[in-house]
Image (cartoon, protein in one colour):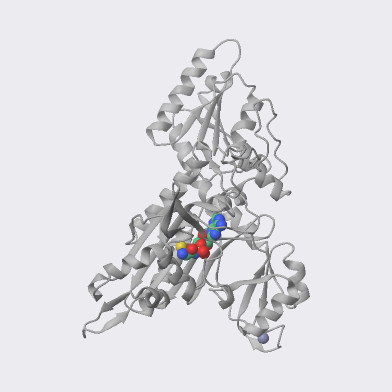
Length: 494
Ligand SMILES: Nc1ncnc2c1ncn2[C@@H]1O[C@H](COS(=O)(=O)NC(=O)[C@@H](N)CS)[C@@H](O)[C@H]1O
Ligand SMILES: [Zn+2]
């Protein structure tokens, strides 16, 4: 792609024409290459869009997103939240209130300065997150105690001029699937209760898509700009680095002061409101793909799989009609149960079919051949374990349903075992340094900033957070030797 002066601006890899062979998936042990390849050949996102940090959803990948985000919507809608939509463009004067007081996003924000050839009288920011779009409206909406709490969320695209290495699903400049909730409360404690609820809701969402997470309080120097404190959910990726896949921020009255959000209490006084905000992005999909995938490709929990079952007729010269009729009957009975099922009647060899559908993470494969028909049975193969079973055709729908529901739990349990195997309790900083090459270290910390910063400098990695569930056993802070009951996670992060 070239710009008006003929300069090649694509910067992306040359478009692969159809003749180019599909890339071969490397083993998952080479995680970085595995991830980049599966995003491409698994038809999740097309990374060739000619703007750095912006990517295109393939329909298959979008099918995964659609299911994950319908789970997010269900959990939020069933916990007193209402979905809405605020504008994308934010006037400079409102945005700069945040920049003066809170210094959050002024280095990451994109600006719109013209309408066509006409310079705008006020520059407009593309929302990097929507506090500065929403809170001037909250100021208009919040008059009295009776207006509280407000619990709204939106699922929008946001824009951040990320200067670190951009990657599809993990670090984008256009975050295409940014679910942001913004709540308003009468007191600091009410907002704290909302933070606690939001953490539980996020745990529920991630449990539903079989993702185990670490929950911790970010150190003060790493909290959300303008927040009182941040609770974060991190997934341990297969390479041992952590990916922040959700954050919940207690904002105190900081933004209410900046945007003058006050309510009249029972005594007729004007009181500053307390707020929270909490976000999830397409990193949720990155974690889903990364934690469950294997050397053969995607492994998708049934709730997120665009195709849950593929029926494969094993055809020979004769008996084709009978086999196809049996396959159609199976497909009908599964569709009646709301199961997402396809038949692969293509002329690919069976082995090539297995490869194709395993790559796409289809949860269950059903094979029906002449011998199966004679026994009125079919072969069922689970994608996660590869386990092969013969099941009677008569109640195939129940057989499939029971395996699909077991698979979601089994995927979670297996991922939880892998996560725990990547957490290394340490007693000294050299041990931590070694442990974070493989996963997440735990170490005692007296919680003083000075010790925390010293530890980070010596380790060459950041304190990820203070686990919200602490064992309570005491240890000694490796920086000052003080006895402390607090342990922290230390990890390399995305
Ligand atoms: N460049 C990015 N690409 C993809 N996801 C991102 C990016 N930046 C942040 N996220 C995700 O978005 C979540 C929320 O972002 S945030 O900055 O922590 N929090 C906020 O913006 C608050 N306003 C809550 S919505 C993060 O936890 C992270 O999972
Ligand atoms: Zn200390």
